[in-house]
Image 1: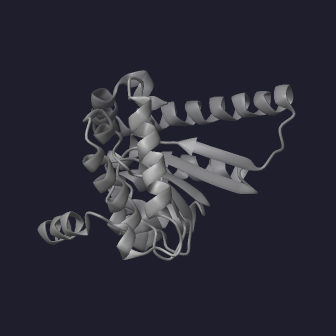
Image 2: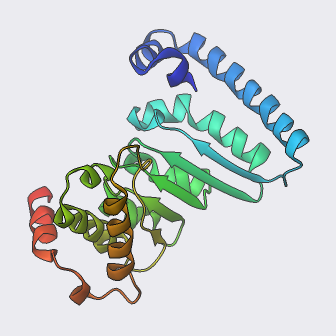
Amino acid sequence: AAGSLLGTSRLYFWLLKYPNEMHKLFRKLEETFKVLREYYYEVTGAERGHLGLADDHSGYLNRRMYEKFTLPYNLRLYEAFGTKDRSLHMDSHMEHIADIITDVYRVRNVDVGVESDIKVLAEKFKGKTIFNGNANWRVLLEGSLEAIEIEVERCIYYAAPGGGYIFDNGGETYANIPPEMLKYEVEYAKKVGKYPIKQGNFKHLDVIEREKRKNG
């Protein structure tokens, strides 16, 4: 919410220059969230205890800054409204705070954006939380079935072994994506990602392995 209100450039600059004032803003946003959540329960009659947070901007903070400016507020909201189930969406990096997500927030489902390294997250999330996402939706605009296949295989190759991963595009599936490309992506993911995962279902392992060696 703060990033949407201030703009990201101002947000990060003010966190450094005016930390006390930013905490005042965050506390006000926290109280506003609580009021709106209670109103949501009142109007809808929804069951309490389930909370999903969307936190796109916090992943650009280093761990120390995250622990100072994000963790306390998110944790209090989860403890107040997520007593039964907790989820988190982040389009920014999660690798450096993965243990906070699993061990402090105790989130059960994580929606991963395209910027995170799925190889790292698969290792850190294994056995601790279900996660989905990371497939780069931009390949759906390239007009190349092969590019789609490689992106599907990349995510499944790194994240699917051992279970706990649900194939999905990172972030959102945006407007103007050709429906036939999205349809092909889903169909190909169902083919490659069918358990038990078999290397014989992959057509582009050489590309993925080459990328793996290149990136270390």
